[in-house]
Length: 250
Image (cartoon, rainbow, N blue to C red; front, side, top):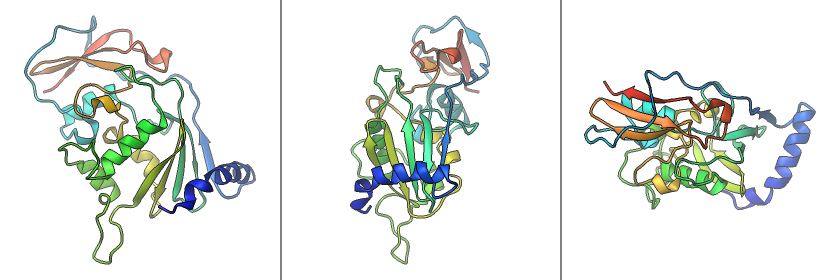
């Protein structure tokens, strides 16, 4: 990534807002803080149940391959964007005229289930984990969803010597703003950012556990059921579930 990109970022942001108002260089879409509908629960419970043993469920969003795992992950975690096109952990974004730069403004006041507060450093850490095979937080996952959506990982080249990945990196602009840069336009990027595989995880849960920020948090797991309970610290109080739920795994 060019070293001058971050230096020019402040000017770019100011010009983007000005030109957008004039129908020019950038498009900015804000997302309001209206309550998001709570996902319909298959079955309600009184809350958490006693710890259960058994079951085999990968709750790492980036490596959750089975339909069961992706369903449960969808209740526990959130990405920058929601499936309906509104903001989730990002409350607004700006796209550069050439379609290669995406500036995401993060929603303030978001707390993960482990008590960690969302900031730009956490978002950068997640993207680095997905993209860079040598990242210290990588673990042993295959990150197949990243390869399928972005073409490859850091350092991988085509026969012509060009990067395989259309993603070129992420930069922290300030505590609540990140810049994502692409090698080529991707009109589906915002949709991809709503995929459960690209949910933002609290760094304390990279090695395992529930590091989500969604309206439900993990309670227990049995051979046939994942028991979830409402997360009282959810950033949108109007969308906090009234009861826990049992998500069937069969």
